[in-house]
Image (cartoon, rainbow, N blue to C red):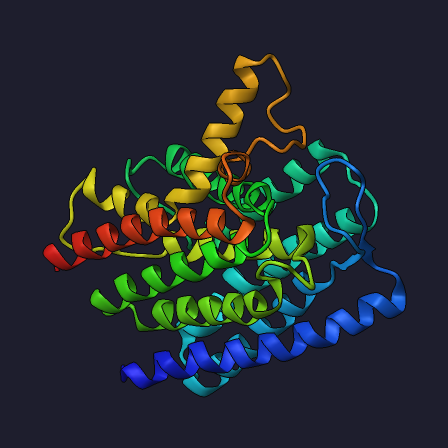
Amino acid sequence: MSPWLYVAAFVGSGILSALLVKGSIWLAHWSGLTDGPDGGRKTQDRPIPKLGGIAVAIAFTLVFLTAVGVSGEITAFQLLASVLLPALIVAGLGFIDDIRTLNPWIRLAAQTLLALLVWFTGTQVGFFRIDWLDAAVTVLWIVGLTNAMNLLDNSDGLAASTTLVAALGTGIVAAIYGQYFVGALSFALAGTAAGFLWHNWAPASVYLGDAGAYFLGFLLAIVTLRLRPVGIALPWSALIPILLVFVPILDTTFVVVRRLLERRHPFTPGRDHLSHVLMDRGLSVGQAVGALQLVLIVSVAGAVALAWSFR
């Protein structure tokens, strides 16, 4: 596949995402779907639209359907059922949660069912060659990364920039191993995140909301799972996807362990994420996000180098 097709997927999805997110900002102000300051975690000085996630989902969907139509490959149509539809459903679940808070167990059960659907339709790990164990690892990866991205969406630009860097790295690894459609999918995801980031970098003019964070996290989990680094044995093959999404894993682990040690519920909201720790030490929002992205760039570069060395 020509590298220019990857560029087209990235640029096209980025422009479309930026335009649709701009429209969602107007719609959110008109409809009142905004997120206002609460004197606690939400420190913004004005109501911020939170329909950006829906715009991101629509932008990616349009690019995805265009790619499927142009390729005409049966594998592309299979990806439509196993990738896009579950991702849109999880985005809808997040949107409901944005409007009215859902019971966390209901959210978790729905995400688990969607992850099982993804596994049954072909997106799965095959480390152990034992169906139930591979299914458990697949579901844990998808549900875990979906919620990790939602937890990471705690500072302007953090979730979007993380998706951008991680998806670019995933696209490069996919291209190295000739997984061209997975590569194009990853570059389109990166472009979609970049278009949103244009409006979400500090000070943000729009938020992802749970809908957008779930959507990006779910898709990132799927494209990293679909990588097939041929010729790399365990544990190195398992290390590649972990390096690609190292920052969400690191942040979630840090928060959960810290809260458990403090005898707090691990999934209660709070300003105790890595970005908040960096800001408490004097960094601005942009500097804190940039520091975490430097960490992710290093880990993603490690994943790409590992994939290249075994190609």
